[in-house]
Image (cartoon, rainbow, N blue to C red; front, side, top):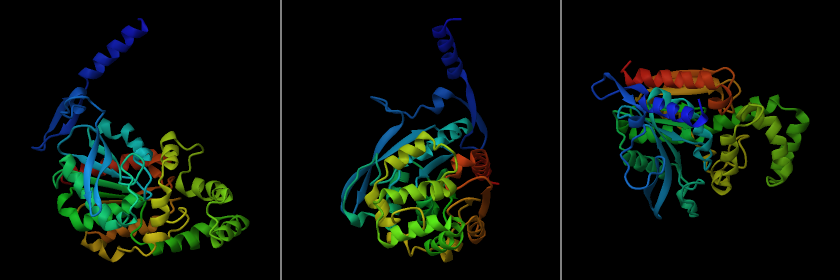
Length: 345
């Protein structure tokens, strides 16, 4: 068989393939792949990418989103970390969610690489980001019957804050690798993670921090092998989507809110703490922790008990980006939980 005939045959086979998804009456329905990827778009097709308009106190802007899939029962919005990283490191979900028939959205928050990047510093507050997420929800047509929010790291902060205000519009909440208290995060970084470092390396890092010499190339030279590769992503070679996300970070917003690195937290988020408010979250919630995470996995487990309807997923080989370095445990757990919530169990 020639290569061209083989490719044509493969494409015809894929077009005829089907998958099972839940429909509104709760039954399973087989849909063809072409229907799963049919979003009803007209004109020039752009692979599900839309620039969604958002209104802010200082003007109107647009944020980048990419839709994958068509499922009226399950719409998942992915909230990336940072602040001001990008959706790119969350592209790994493309290898898993379509197989399950989930509809999901990659999304660059305002100020991130693929979205508008205004410079007014008053925009970079949690309440303003929460309102942005609500506007995105409305734009994608999600509601309390089908809307799931999955936030990682800073995205987990945003997801919890969104749920505290708008959980009536949600079906489920997934908080991936983010504790509910920045001061507790700082203590864990200082007392546990820093204590695991080579003392000489730690002294040099602390000296650079004391002098606020964060732009010194030596700072990242020390953090990358001794902290980032231990607690952020433990894969020997970081995947291309992770590399691109770090390359495209907006350093002004990131430093303003998070601080100069993932080694502890400073900036506007330094005193953020909603641990006492978790009891007010009643929407089904999955907390995800990992053994080597920058966040204390025991704190993540505790949070799953503080919310009213919580579950806990532990990734024994994972770090802060457990969706990459403990991928099977992470994805299997997330998918199983979403299906459980979808069926009302």
